[in-house]
Image (cartoon, rainbow, N blue to C red):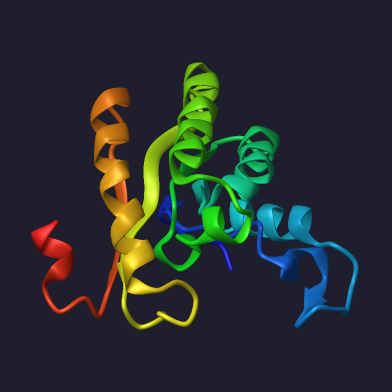
Length: 165
């Protein structure tokens, strides 16, 4: 069904494995991401933003932003992936330097439009503990200011802690 409105999807999760035909780790169908994007365009989704939520997925997200017209990306550490540096045994300062290097390299192409999705999510502490989330969240403010990019924020069940940052 075509829309009469121009739509901008600010949370196009195009890196989800379901677009590669996988559900719960099992292959169910052929990749259909091109079909999904074409269907979105037909429904007047004129622009999309895909978010890189950790260092390891930035390359894939950036490739998607470059592949599809009027598709952009963000880059930051989602609260649920804020412990990636620990899982990969990377010192936190080295991890942040790698993120900043990616931002510096990709700023000129115009596809990187925000820092994030970042913030706090206390409903999913099983993904990443509160202390890891609180350790990486402030890093994003400096990046936003340095590169003059807006923040793409995430807050869930933080009981006011999010606003106090």
